[in-house]
Length: 106
Image 1 (cartoon, rainbow, N blue to C red):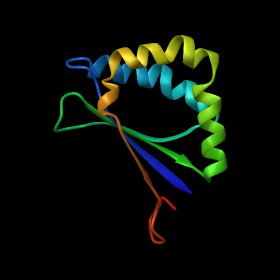
Image 2 (tube, rainbow, N blue to C red):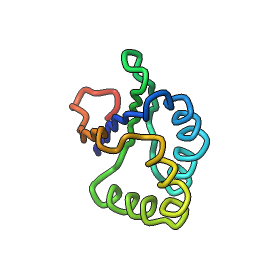
Image 3 (cartoon, rainbow, N blue to C red):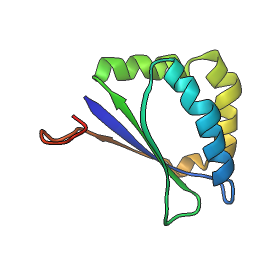
Protein backbone atom coordinates (compact mmCIF):
# COMPACT_ATOMS: atom_id res chain seq x y z
CA UNK A 1 0.00 0.00 0.00
CA UNK A 2 1.11 3.56 -0.65
CA UNK A 3 -0.21 7.09 -0.43
CA UNK A 4 0.27 10.14 -2.59
CA UNK A 5 0.61 13.48 -0.87
CA UNK A 6 -0.19 16.04 -3.53
CA UNK A 7 0.64 19.70 -2.92
CA UNK A 8 -0.91 22.24 -5.26
CA UNK A 9 -0.59 25.98 -5.62
CA UNK A 10 -3.81 27.72 -6.60
CA UNK A 11 -3.48 30.71 -8.86
CA UNK A 12 -3.25 33.85 -6.69
CA UNK A 13 -6.49 34.57 -4.86
CA UNK A 14 -8.34 31.54 -6.30
CA UNK A 15 -7.86 28.94 -3.56
CA UNK A 16 -11.45 29.24 -2.32
CA UNK A 17 -12.73 28.63 -5.83
CA UNK A 18 -10.30 25.71 -6.17
CA UNK A 19 -11.43 24.09 -2.91
CA UNK A 20 -15.09 24.37 -3.93
CA UNK A 21 -14.34 22.80 -7.33
CA UNK A 22 -12.24 20.10 -5.73
CA UNK A 23 -14.93 19.20 -3.19
CA UNK A 24 -17.90 19.53 -5.54
CA UNK A 25 -16.42 18.03 -8.72
CA UNK A 26 -12.92 16.56 -8.64
CA UNK A 27 -13.12 14.41 -5.51
CA UNK A 28 -16.62 13.03 -6.25
CA UNK A 29 -15.63 12.28 -9.85
CA UNK A 30 -12.45 10.47 -8.85
CA UNK A 31 -14.20 8.60 -6.02
CA UNK A 32 -16.91 7.45 -8.46
CA UNK A 33 -14.16 5.71 -10.44
CA UNK A 34 -12.68 4.02 -7.36
CA UNK A 35 -10.06 6.54 -6.23
CA UNK A 36 -9.58 6.57 -2.43
CA UNK A 37 -9.20 10.21 -1.40
CA UNK A 38 -8.04 10.08 2.20
CA UNK A 39 -7.78 13.77 3.07
CA UNK A 40 -8.04 17.32 1.76
CA UNK A 41 -6.40 20.36 3.39
CA UNK A 42 -5.76 24.06 2.91
CA UNK A 43 -2.30 25.25 3.90
CA UNK A 44 -2.60 27.39 7.03
CA UNK A 45 0.66 29.20 6.20
CA UNK A 46 0.20 29.75 2.45
CA UNK A 47 -2.95 31.50 1.28
CA UNK A 48 -2.83 29.71 -2.08
CA UNK A 49 -1.58 26.30 -0.88
CA UNK A 50 -3.66 23.12 -0.98
CA UNK A 51 -2.77 19.52 -0.07
CA UNK A 52 -4.64 16.27 -0.57
CA UNK A 53 -3.87 12.62 -0.03
CA UNK A 54 -4.86 9.54 -2.04
CA UNK A 55 -4.40 5.89 -1.07
CA UNK A 56 -3.56 2.94 -3.34
CA UNK A 57 -3.39 -0.78 -2.52
CA UNK A 58 -0.55 -1.47 -4.97
CA UNK A 59 1.10 -0.31 -8.17
CA UNK A 60 -1.41 -2.13 -10.38
CA UNK A 61 -4.32 -0.35 -8.73
CA UNK A 62 -2.52 2.98 -9.00
CA UNK A 63 -1.94 2.53 -12.73
CA UNK A 64 -5.53 1.39 -13.34
CA UNK A 65 -7.02 4.31 -11.42
CA UNK A 66 -4.76 6.84 -13.12
CA UNK A 67 -5.93 5.54 -16.49
CA UNK A 68 -9.59 5.47 -15.45
CA UNK A 69 -9.49 9.06 -14.20
CA UNK A 70 -7.09 10.89 -16.49
CA UNK A 71 -8.10 9.18 -19.74
CA UNK A 72 -11.82 9.59 -19.04
CA UNK A 73 -13.61 11.80 -21.54
CA UNK A 74 -15.09 13.94 -18.76
CA UNK A 75 -11.61 14.62 -17.34
CA UNK A 76 -10.03 15.51 -20.67
CA UNK A 77 -12.91 17.65 -21.94
CA UNK A 78 -14.38 19.23 -18.83
CA UNK A 79 -12.56 18.80 -15.53
CA UNK A 80 -8.92 18.95 -16.63
CA UNK A 81 -9.23 22.34 -18.35
CA UNK A 82 -10.86 23.87 -15.26
CA UNK A 83 -8.16 22.38 -13.02
CA UNK A 84 -5.41 23.85 -15.21
CA UNK A 85 -7.12 27.24 -15.02
CA UNK A 86 -7.31 27.23 -11.23
CA UNK A 87 -3.86 25.84 -10.42
CA UNK A 88 -0.27 26.70 -11.23
CA UNK A 89 0.78 23.28 -12.60
CA UNK A 90 4.48 24.15 -12.46
CA UNK A 91 4.28 24.27 -8.67
CA UNK A 92 2.65 20.87 -8.14
CA UNK A 93 4.61 18.51 -5.90
CA UNK A 94 3.65 14.83 -5.59
CA UNK A 95 5.27 12.72 -2.90
CA UNK A 96 4.70 8.98 -2.72
CA UNK A 97 4.88 7.60 0.81
CA UNK A 98 4.57 4.14 2.39
CA UNK A 99 3.32 3.80 5.97
CA UNK A 100 5.75 2.49 8.56
CA UNK A 101 4.85 -0.77 10.36
CA UNK A 102 3.36 1.04 13.38
CA UNK A 103 1.49 3.70 11.37
CA UNK A 104 -2.27 3.93 12.06
CA UNK A 105 -2.71 4.41 8.29
CA UNK A 106 -1.39 0.94 7.51
